[in-house]
Length: 85
Image 1 (cartoon, helix red, strand yellow):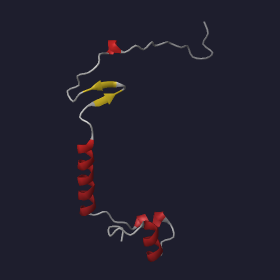
Image 2: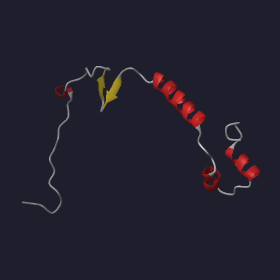
Image 3: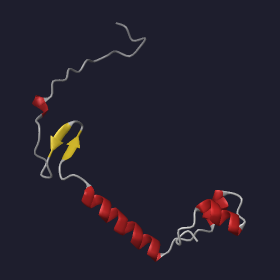
Image 4: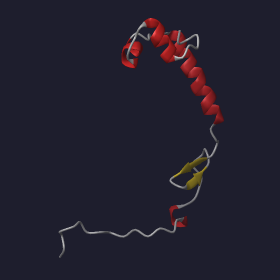
């Protein structure tokens, strides 16, 4: 029924399962499900941008991008509480 597009709650009512955990327990994954999952994943990957934004630094597929010196960040070392010298 799930593969036919029947909503889970309707299928549960028809099959007599009272909890989603029991309904899913009998939901067998087969080769068609795995194949469809891979097709959907490949379609999604094709929609991703060709450039990556890693930690706010734009990079292209070859890893070219901003240098660390281009970042204007100041790092302050803090002492843990209770370790006053």
